[in-house]
Length: 337
Ligand code: ATP
Ligand code: MG
Ligand code: FE
Image (cartoon, rainbow, N blue to C red; front, top):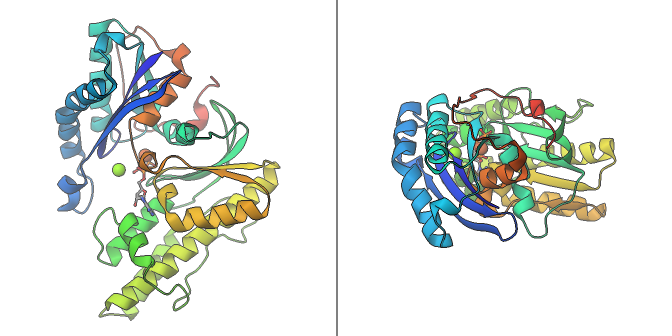
């Protein structure tokens, strides 16, 4: 079965073709980061308009790359939510218009299920059950995953998401938007021991997390150390990254212990972080456990994870072309597939 996936929940337009036997045939992403940079964050109306410009050309590029035609599609999957309402509506409109024109079934995919299942696109993929750490720009959640749509929330951030903490701290350090990757690069040159930052909720006894205090600690350091020289900036980045990696790693281990599971799966943009991967590799290897990540290019938003999640839920695809976006949509409300 050949599934087209369209992602447009925020500031990336992603399109991909996934085949249930041959795997991922093509995927293309257009990032709007350059467009939003001068505003220091995503401007929703600009995002929507840009998705309109990109969706069809990216679809054509994917089809050309895979050597397929539109009428060979078996289904069309699109991100139905959560995300920016206007941006979501663009993907939904394109998917449903294509479905109607081609008389192919369409399926609305949950963006976080897309992230969560993206490690299944890695080689080798993890088998169920596993503990999943979803660490993206908007979410930080630990879940027990027993199958497609069988997601039990174990704990989550009580305030900022880890990616958000990366981005906000980067902004405080003058590293632009979204600063997560830049902060991480600078951290490599810094000394993580010069400053000690808090490890919030490490001893809370549950699997919840908190990152806004860490961001405030960065703010205080930046104020103390003004004017910031490059070495100090790098040292703050290193201390910040070490704190966040430490908390995430220890909470993952606690979740593995609590569930008795042996496999850990990381999903979402912060899953691209090299320090985090190194710490998790080390911690799981020591305990003879396994850890799985999405391919690096599929950590942040992309169409491949949407095409794949759609393929996993093909039975739910419908020849119905009325649609709505779901800007808020709890992951745990999804049915088992
Ligand atoms: P959500 O999926 O929760 O709606 P999102 O789609 O914005 O949020 P993603 O695209 O999964 O989130 O990830 C983007 C986030 O990942 C940003 O906060 C970005 O800074 C962060 N990020 C990306 N690469 C890295 C890295 N190497 N180190 C740390 N953070 C990173
Ligand atoms: Mg993004
Ligand atoms: Fe995302």
